Amino acid sequence: MTEPSDPGRAPDPEAIRPQRPAGPTHRALAERAQRRRSAVIAGVSTVVVFGALAAIVVRAPGWGQVRRAFFSWDDFRASLGDIAPAFMLNVRIFLIAEVLILVVALAVAVARSSRSPVLFPVRVLATVYVDLLRGIPIILLIFLLGFGVPALRLDGVTNEPVVWATVALVLSYSAYVSEVFRAGIDSVHESQRAAARSLGLTEGKALRFVVLPQAVRRVIPPLLNDFIALQKETALVGLLGPIEAARQAQIYSSKTFNFTSYLAAAVIFVALTVPLTRFTDWLVSRRRDRVSAGRLA
Amino acid sequence: MSSATWRAIGVVAVTGALLLAGCGDDDDETAGGGGGSCETEDLTLVKEGTLTIGTDTPAFPPWFEDDDPTNGEGFESAVAYAVAEELGFAPEDVEWTVVPFNNAFAPGDKSFDFDINQVSISEEREQAIDFSDGYYDVNQAIVGFSDSEAASATSLEDLKGLKLGAQQGTTSLDFINDVIDPDQEPYVYNDNSAAKAALDAQQVDGIVLDLPTAFYVSAVEIEGTAVIGQFPSVGEDPEQFGLVFEEGNPLRDCVNEALASLRDSGRLAEIEQEWLSEVVDAPVIPVE
Image 1 (cartoon, rainbow over the protein chains, first blue to last red):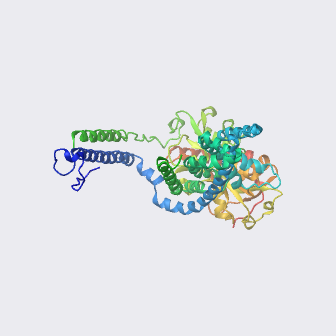
Image 2 (image 1 turned 60 degrees about the vertical axis):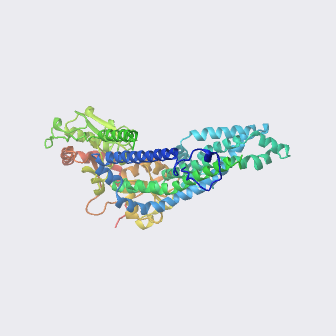
Image 3 (image 1 turned 90 degrees about the horizontal axis):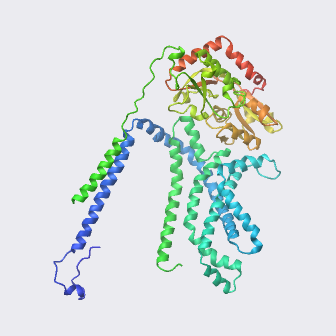
């Protein structure tokens, strides 16, 4: 904000004023002082607050025990070697579930947004699905599908727990994500659809070429939000037996009475979620920039 | 810097100091005195005048009956009440509290005087809690469907190719990993209920449990299954169940005296005979 005086500037109203000594204006000086003061307060405040928190934790009577139980470097290294390979199961489930969720959720959202009277039963079905599946705890769904369906002993139906746990995650998350899509579809102004229809597009084509592209673009940040949550939820697959990262951490922990393995699992999960979170933020800010530049409605 | 700056710093500093002051170390443990005497009134107890015993819920046969530890039926319930009697407690002075299996031997303060929940004595666990002397010599066993390939297994080698399952944190899981060492990674469950459901869903070829539980699962819980084999304990220390105490609890010595007297009088063997007699018939798979 400091504006260096420019002697070569063309005459302007400023020049008519009585001459001041060269250098920053009073206002610039005041602003600079204000900034410096803010920086000092922020710095001191940060040091004091975090210092106090650290001191509280470190001075606590049980700190030594907590440090051994949760922050043991040896246990961290030892457990990380077991947990990292187990985490690949989480990643595989996550990647497959994510694609399926996008497909199912979009289908449900489109069904709920349909208007044709013929499709009324489909709308009812989609609404009931979303209401029910969002309300059911995922754990129940995982046990129900993972242990229940195979126990029916149906011919030709897999009893593979990873498959059924993934189906449970897809069913549950599709209900949430379909609402995100529906919000996106509803956010596209009615005039867009009307304009598309007046150009001769059918209802279906208007949805596909005009409404959905805008709707989907708008909901990308909340979609990623749900997928970050999904990443962590993949740990529930372990309930059915397969050893994924969180279970591996638990196994290590119950052998050693040391919880550092959970920290190691957390570090691995965070290593995946933080880049995704930053990516989401970047998408949001890019979109905001474009909107403010008037390039996007 | 202006006075306003200093004032702001002051506020922050005072807040910090108050936060710090809030964490005084005022929770000095008043460690139980006494020790030595095993007279009922001298015992160090969680709750005065009451013997508080922990176990998991649901409580399964043959260790407990009808999911009710208080009825004195089932092997562990009977042992618990016999120990209580030796210590001088009437049955009505015994109280039960729910303790999940893995919490029983995790470090920390305990809500029970002792826990009885088929906890095998092990060095690892002994770092966090104290065990009584063993009250039952336990064999691991494997349960599978009688009409499956697994049912014909007669050696450890026959079991290697199977998909196995066990509850996490148990010696059964250690047995799979350390002794059977299967080709496929075992499935691991939060509790035996999930392991049983997985066996019923035929997601695993066999689950490993302690022998009496295995017997109950095959005889009552999952139709069509059998105890494929039991594995005799190896090494100089057989695997034993022990009662769990908070580390350093002086009550342990008194309970050990009680257990010794139950063993000497033949009472412990009687209780075992009453509740666990049929388990001896299971085929033996040798562990070299």
